[in-house]
Image (cartoon, rainbow, N blue to C red; front, side, top):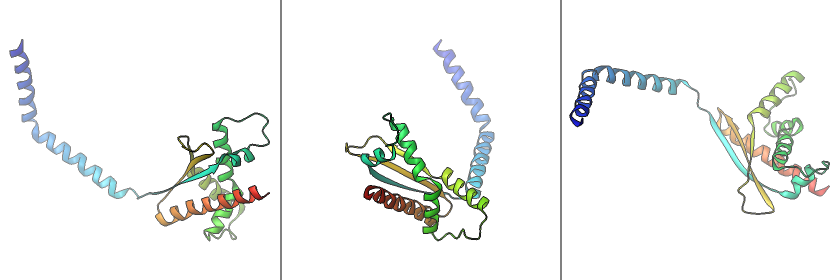
Length: 167
């Protein structure tokens, strides 16, 4: 029985050895294709920042809801506030993007693009009981613009958060 297994293994090794040129050519072809595709694909940069938010601000956002919302609902509410049209227009104005000459349809396309491209996720593993952490992520081909966009969005969020607290 053991001799037969050794014969089977030896036969497979012999077949592999005979087909080694095919294997080497196939491996070299696959590596060449993967290398070519990696050079052709555009480089995309990601900017990410973590922000801590006081739970009482989430309560201000959710104050008109009679039932105590689940955490998913709070995440959704914060995401809607952060990617609202008015917030994004202020952020784009902070970035000196001139939209005065654009039609309303073009402005709406830009706002929709940024709403879809901006990802907001909560970090439920926060060690502080009175604070929650959330992450804002944006990807773009220009690393400086991605960084500036995320920073401007966080800055606007903080300004709006402080003005809500003052009210």
